[in-house]
Length: 392
Image (cartoon, rainbow, N blue to C red; front, side, top):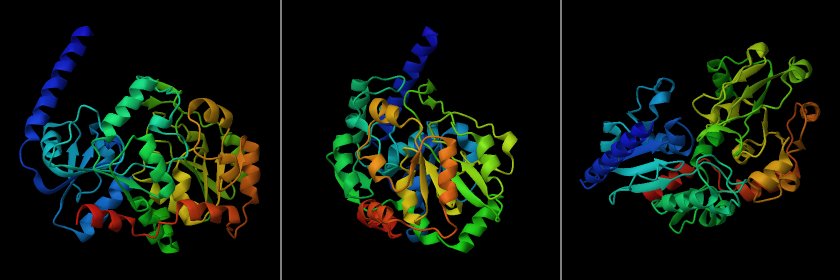
């Protein structure tokens, strides 16, 4: 084991040195590398910017960095050019790229070439505390001091940071220790929601996803828990919903789609609930799941900030609220007071809230107030704003 670790360190040193040497070569003009969630997906803000550049600026050479373990499920579009993360081809292209478009942190050993513009899109409006604002880190493989230091060492490489609103801008500066330029544009990924929220698109998506059109759709999209893990980067998750009861009470009218967080390693076993429960954790992008759903069920995930753009009901299934708020992360605002939907802690109460939702979806004043604060920049043109600022 000791010999293996030693060889691994030597290989990493060589790889890092080669990356550094190649990065001294001239940049490949108009080349852009996109990466979403450490190469596990082709999604989120990088996908929105990719699609905008592909359509409006065909002169750019666009590449996706993908984790080889997810290669088969990601290589489903012949138009996209792929680079296997950490391969020699990836190293050469990454080191000579003119632009990086990334939505989460890169490994710290990767140096940013002087000729590369690094656009950090991040991946959510913050509810739970981030980076330097976390009082005590419970994640495996690190401690509080090291975690915060590494966050700052990463953020100094960013040339631009995208922010969805003024609220996020203030938090990002402090939580990331970031003093660079922030593009307060709204989130590019939400352009898709605002431009495709129509019945024809929704029916088309349901056909492609093999979902029944005669039933209403619940989307359950929770976040991960810092202290529930198998190992570094592989987190546990317990659904904590009584699916038998949910199916019994709602199965005639509803189906439920599950979308686990990208960090969660669980494989859902929902074989006993065919026709009622569907696992879309590995689906290419959550944006389609937003569109086909009638109600969002979440907890402390930032998905509800995006979903708010659709003006549809949301329910917060917060069975571990006190632990999460007081021990794990803490929040930037009072979720119990300001959440754009009811908070519940049991399956029975969850069912009661779903039953309250009338067929005519209404929006409360509380939701309107929420949208005015967090969604005011979202008008379907956020990608255009970012591209005009950075690429033009």
